[in-house]
Structures are given as C-alpha cells and as structure tokens.
Image: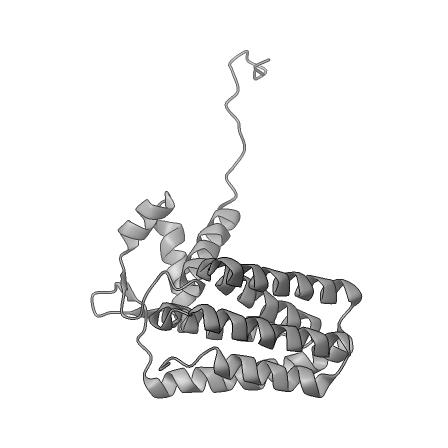
Length: 224
C-alpha cells in the first residue's frame, strides 16, 4: 500500500543514496581489475569510458582514480588522463624484493599467531589455487593467490600490514598477463602454497617465512 504524507500527497521519500558505499564499490572494482591484470602497463584510463563501463557518474570514478594515484598505482599524464605505470626492470625487481621481505615476516608471525579458523580460511584459498590448476583458470588463480597471501598477513597480527601490502600487489597486477602462467606454473604454485600451509599448521615460523620468500620470488619472474 502506497504511503502518503500528512497532506494526502503520495510520498516519494525513498531515502538518500549512500554515496560512501557507491564510492567504495567503484574503488573496489577498479582495484580488482588492476589486481587481475585487466589493465595493462601504459594503458590510458579515460574517465568517461570507465564511468560508462561501470554504469556510474564521473565523480566516484574520479575519486577512485585519485585514491589509486595517491599510492602510486596509477599516474596522471600531462593531459590529466590517468595511466597505468610501466615499471622498469629494476622497479619490478624492487617490488618483488619488498614484498618478499614484508610477507616473510608476516608469515613467520602468522605461524605463531594464527587461529584455527584463520588456518582453515587459508587452507580454503589453497584449495581454490589447486582448483585453478585443474582448469588452467588464471582469474581464479590470481584471486585465490591474493586471498591466500592476504589471509596470512591478517593472521600475522602486524598492524597496517595489509594496508602496506595492497598497493604493492596492485602495482604488480598489470604485469601478470605479460608472462601468462602455464600449467607448470600452476603446479609449482600448488606445491609452494601447500608447503607454506604445512608450515603454518606446524607453527614453524622459519619454514613459513622461507616458503613465502620462495613463492614470491618464483611466481614473479617477469622475464620468464
């Protein structure tokens, strides 16, 4: 039954749109595209085309791009169009090096601090990685791999660790399809992640740390 105002007129008060939620949804969508390698190094990101693709206005897209620019994930061109950076070989090596240092420490602490529920969640992501190998599903692999590493970071109890790691992953995302993992890559990834999972379950910080270092370095050989 349609509700009316006190003066008898129909009410059209559906409540205000939660703009914060919309902006976060757009930001998350762009981050996911970046993480999954759907944007490539050097690609221009025209505001209007992105807004049309996302079915939204320019403002939340502009806000999301500015947030990504603030952490170096995109850069502004002289014409003010945002562009996906093209990291040099040294910058790529540095990204891998920084990630290996941070994630090794996180894995060591996660081995000591994780709860059984967190270990089960990490094991679930490991299962998803295994499933991705069965079908050579790169999208599933990339998503499960990211979730696996971030779940370990959360379990480490290191303050701000996911906030620090996420921009590094976002910077590396556009590079992943340059070296399209083959089936052997998937098989190695399964073995690496299962070793890490075993170390976490055994609460062995040294093996968890060395396992993460091996995985990060091996899985990010951009010249392979």
